[in-house]
Amino acid sequence: MKSHRASILLSNTADYGPNLRLGVHLVNSAYALPKLRRAVPVDPAVLASYAGRYMLAPTFVLTVRAEGGRLFVQATAQPEYEVFAEDDTNFFYRVVDAQITFDRLDNGATPPLTLTLHQNGRDRPGRRLQ
Image 1 (cartoon, rainbow, N blue to C red):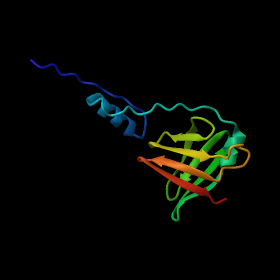
Image 2: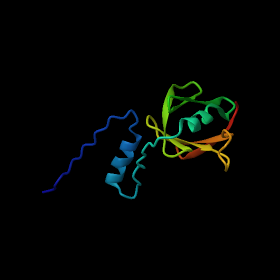
Image 3: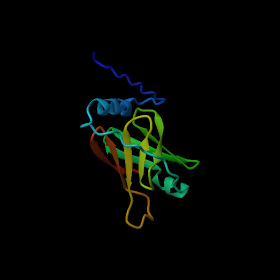
Image 4: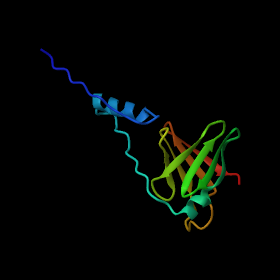
């Protein structure tokens, strides 16, 4: 007689991608587990320095704004979402499996001129418009 094991995975997220990757890992451990990301506080002045528009393609721009110690990003023709800091330059979305890295100069004194959107296994650089 075969033994059957059932597992239930509960989630309160709108993005089921990490849940699917966890399920695939449970079935086949050769597939990597999703990375656990934890938000950390960042100086509001640093967040404010990221505000601006970054062009990733002629028809695709990320608009970044800081408000009340939080950072928000809106892509062309998409809703605005909050992003959360992993450190001073790396941020992640909670609504989709995507991350943003702000490319600061060595001294960090000036606003970044570029950012990189990491999504679907691709790194899409964008240059600051304003």
